[in-house]
Length: 330
Image (tube, rainbow, N blue to C red; front, side):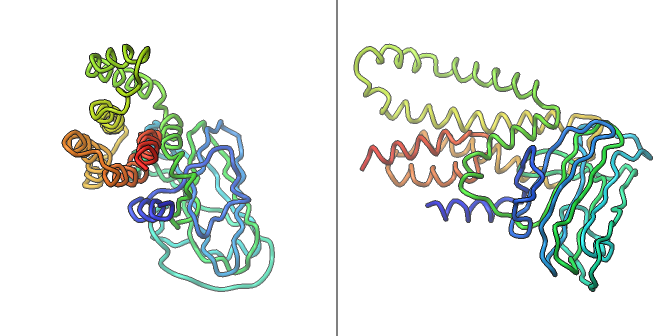
């Protein structure tokens, strides 16, 4: 089951693994991609240390939160990389932080510093479909490393900014990553200035669910003093699963509405259909189906796989609930 979950998530997702307060020195940047999130003040320097072997891909992008106001013609960061023959790394002109490498090249041995050009133009924002957020590219470079080394990437903020540094292009998720994905997603939203909307929406959704299941909750409180059999009832199982599915769908719906109503956002494109389908319509469809299915071991098993891999704002409640129910039925 562990391997199946990882394969499903890896195949369906196209997102870097979020990390906070880390220089990536001990991380695998060839077999896995990362997104380092920082809140930087003008004058602060962020040092990212990347261990890359000869012939492997050097891939980095520096982005600003798409929700942050952007002044055209203003540099927000300086970006450089130092390491063996760093100046020989030829940045792929087609690379914007999300495309793959298009070319290769040569060698020698000497520590060098390469300045990575930054953009001050008002370029289209990149929409991250699974994490659901907009990113503004400030700098990007991808090319083959002629001589292996620990490459030190320096990002110096010239103005206060919410900075994300993307490293690597290989999508890979561990079992721990899957369990904690909801937490990482919310943290990236907070980095994007979404703390207050998230708290308000969470409270509002909770109130709706409490009102919807008020009679069920009343029965639950009554049953606490006597039999606990109520908590294994079909009605209770349906309510628990539907509540989390609804919570997930509404969180992403509200998030999409808010970030796309911001003046700094670019025009809507087809990529919006993916989060609408995966994060909103699919959970609601599963919620409807769950109330009309027999809650067998197979049903809980299918729900376990689905909720572990695609329910990115469910805080792993349904998978834990499914495991509990499957164990009870043995």
